[in-house]
Length: 400
Image 1 (cartoon, rainbow, N blue to C red):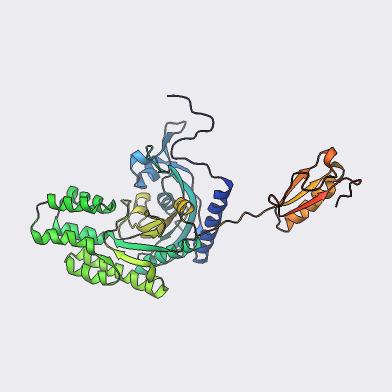
Image 2: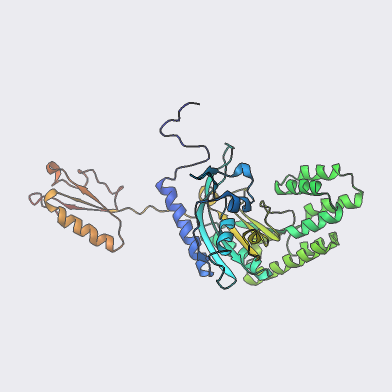
């Protein structure tokens, strides 16, 4: 293998130029402030976690985890999401805090992409976890907050697709009971939006026409609150019925929030993490075909850390918003340029400190002796580079 060039970096990692960083920080600040107004407190967890705890609980497949060994030979991982680390903290350091807990975060996460084209191995997520409440009100709160967060991030045109793992599980167990492998194959087709493959998997089951129609009908369960009625008619499973009742209750709360126009019920939508147990959702911006946020209920995850609590949450896919959504326009704030001669250095730097204390961006420039009396333009400073140019020249040159 050839030695990498000095300017190269590993596949899937990127550099963030100042303009992109400005957009990232603006989104981060706006979204975290939005979350704080909803009562969510920010939490920070380590970049590196133990594989046997957070690594296993994350539900990210082993091949997508970045693993490393410490000096004692213990396997560590770079965090692949924030939900599992926060579950660890809630089950330990925050175990005595009053429930429900509302926590927010902004952090980089890592997933090995095996040099897949266009995929990032390191990216940013901004999200929340609501722990200790299993009600439809809690699920509706995180969906409504996801909508508010997308708007705070500058995403103006989007839709939230909301489904429920319980409905699909109940329907599949009713139609093909005990056939775990076949059920997982059907779920994979829905997860990948491969509806042709989903139908082919149904055909391979050799079901009687009525059962085949039940499985195919789920592809039509997409729309408004009327989907709940159609879903109840499709399955007689108790689990499916409970799930639809919960989902419809969530939608009614979203109507009360006044945000239901952003939401559609899509019962083909399932979360891409195995720890999801109930309502799941994804947000799609008009500019992009891939989700800009995702979330759902994960009532069993905290049990892996010794504390049985229901939980729900979501994460914005911040990098996709930065790269693909043009809602936030960053205007570069030009600094004041203070240029000065050696003799007037103290005077110029005092003025720079005064302006900075007032919130102004200031850069300074020492003029060479032979140009200490020069004008701003002749010294190389133009209005394209600075909002204002202040010159402290030599006493002979008149100065400021």
